[in-house]
Image 1: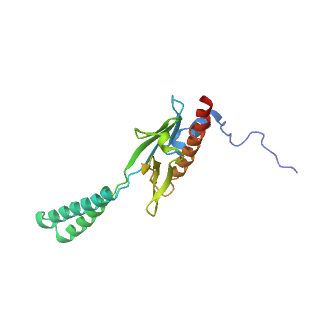
Image 2: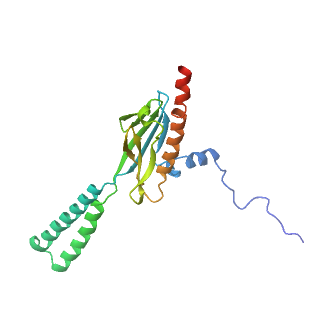
Image 3: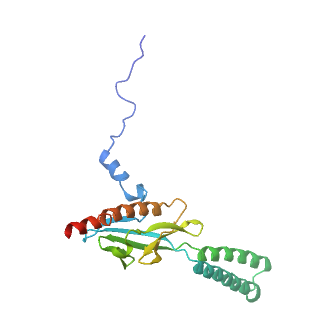
Length: 204
């Protein structure tokens, strides 16, 4: 004997609102910022503008951070042990906590923004203009600063001097902004500077 099947379902599935689902997936909070503040646009002059941010790295700044941590921790310890009426064990615990907090504040990563524009007649780095004629065939390239792979600088020969145009330090271990910027700059330089001789020869 065949079992009886109820023609009415025990429950009904709610219809899927495709439009609502797409809107929810397309919200900025649902998608990671793959470029992380990196911007590439064309300028009104027919050039290429690149905006990016990197981590501020400076030996002098690192020394100031250490001094700030030592002074801040020392002042806190002096107050705890000699000026306050807190029990001795609590003073030690408070000094340890203060040292950790001051360390985190003193060595907080600072990011700064940079802009690089590539135009047929030159390059503008953070508002400073560099002539393409003085750059010549010595197109700027990224190199490591010292032996640290996270510290990179855009550098090259300008006229008769070797200079550093801009920094491009990694903000984190997964940051690949310098590689992306290096590739984009190479393409922009090739398009705007690579054919300068041919253009000038045709005009003359």
